[in-house]
Length: 124
Image (tube, rainbow, N blue to C red; front, side, top):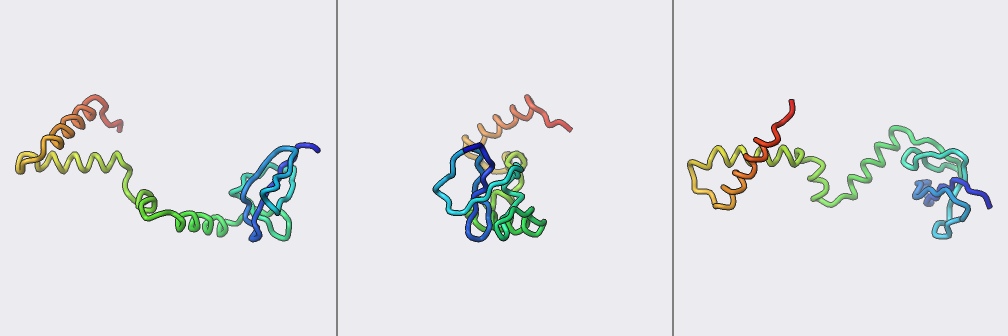
């Protein structure tokens, strides 16, 4: 048996896995062989034929992935980058550190952040 691209898919035509080898994966009941090496995110199977996904298909895939995320992972995709969050927190504490008593751990953290900012300035 020669090496071939095999695209394994579910009953809805969603490609689950791609393999290039000379063995048929018995874990999947549906597969199609094709000499072209497609990225599986770009194709679906319709009437036992490989079809390129439309922009609408790709948007639906992205929405399904997002919908399957837990609340904390959804939040991560919406929050500012962690570097920007740390900078904002740092600036906030710097603004109030002389007006209220902050815990020593917070003051130590501010000193560490200041040192990092001095050692590694932002590149504009």
